[in-house]
Amino acid sequence: MTLFSLEPEPRVPISPGPDAMHVPGWLTLEQQKWIVEQFREWTRGPVPIRAAKVRGHEMSVKTVCLGWHWQPYKYTREATDVNGARVLPVPDWMVELGRRALREAGYSEEQASDYKPDTVLANFYDESARMGMHQDKDERSNAPIVSLSIGDSCTFRFGNTENRNKPYTDLVLESGDLFVFGGASRLAYHGVTRVHPGTAPEGCGLDPADGQSAGRINITMRMTGLNG
Image (tube, rainbow, N blue to C red):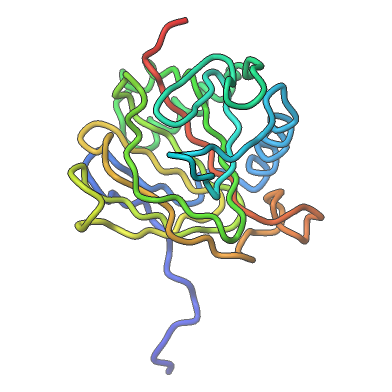
């Protein structure tokens, strides 16, 4: 008889805050690899992937956008801080994926069917990249944010709506995980404190065994509430 089991603890959905839900293993490996292929197409233009500058400092995370181009504190149709080109549209399959994510994260059918993300921020993290605690408040809409993780796992810190300090919850987001936050948690501070190199599963499209570069892709879907 052993004191410790060698079997890993099952990963089950948890809610770190009101209207926030972490659903482990939501995407299959096949789906992850396909999304990685789409991501590589997006980075080829018309607007290339880039590291945005916040108050003059370049972020360690690199981003390519769909629908609306995000630059610190505003959205524009054209990437005026890169090359002036208009970004690619949000594909229909992404909208449908966002609606399914809300349903499976416990949101109502009405909330899911009304969800139409008009911008996607696709972020790439190398092993040294971090994301400081921040609120997603450049949007006019308070619709939920849908976040997908592919590749190396990370430590994701999900906090409160008042400040960057405690209380907060540290979660490990693994390849294929879904995280949704809206409602009372829509303006919760959150960030990535660490990327864990070498943790991407084989077959996800971001594992060296797949012949591809390592790292983490984070896809976030949003409704801006903007017109034009």
